[in-house]
Image (cartoon, rainbow, N blue to C red; front, side, top):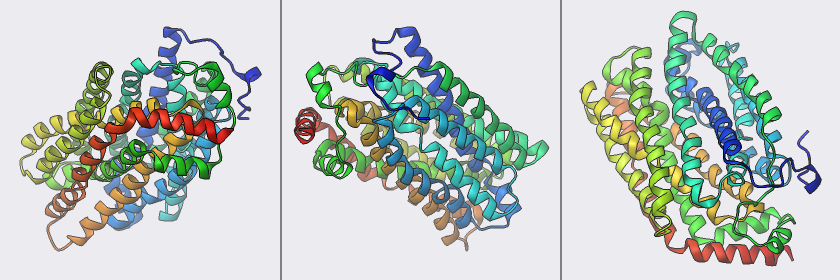
Length: 445
């Protein structure tokens, strides 16, 4: 099914046209949207699912976080390993079909165990998207345009967030939470077919600044243990990944419990809380991602450290505003504070995604990106989301609105060291890129 990525099976061995590259970006953004719709459905429906399944906040944190993320993160790296050698388009299409089918099956779950199995299935499917998509886009967009391309791809996060948090509760209010999973899982099945039919597999590294001789040397697969050891020694990669993990811990923890904060903290209905949270954070995050892409594509040409500085500022700035959201008791003030929080938080990952692709040679791009994404998702979903649910139960002696405010404020604290790590990663990226390329070729020999 995947198809070995050999020269005679490459669908396109010439540089893509701008119009077709834009179509590929549009399709990947649509896939990322349904990807996040499926994730935030659970976040927007935490309370009705919790009541229906009769489970605790800690268990809901487990269902939203580790139940999904343990399989997502564990399988993402071996799948990315395949994506460095086989058709990325087919891997993405297969993953989309799997996660969409299991989202639909989530709607038929009537016990905690059945819902757990469905979430595991969603995690398995979604493991096949992010790293192959990064790698694919890097072969459709040259370095000078990649940050904006990644910014547009990341719009799927915010459209998906709004779709899950607004669409899910809206359907739940008239047909129950199970119907929301069935209705919003079906579009992904259609998109999986369109992906397989309409997206061509490009030649790897065709837009990189690499000589034909180096591309031929890169064709051999480097052993995974050797690759991991090499990446650990690469200072910019290690610092970037560690900072991303800490930022993801805080961001995922706040993001998945945020609608519940609005519901419990301000005594709103589930539909009102999800809609207000999704619009205030989603729209501002969307503009934050686009703004980051626009600024980085220009400033990075002057100084390669700018993406890291901007990302670090976004992490710590968004933390300050999100803490203020947690601690205010006025819903209007909280909504206003959500806009700068989303604006600053919406772009910090985008800058690192683009910098990562520029750092990595084409033949290790999907696997290395997946290791980075593993750190982000594992720390966020296994760590942050579960930690926030645990902390809410730890403050169980307090009123529910106070408990969730304190819990999420504490969850946001890792943003402080994250900003220092990310800012420091930019100081060696140029030398690391050269060393990584030379060492990789030497290892292959």
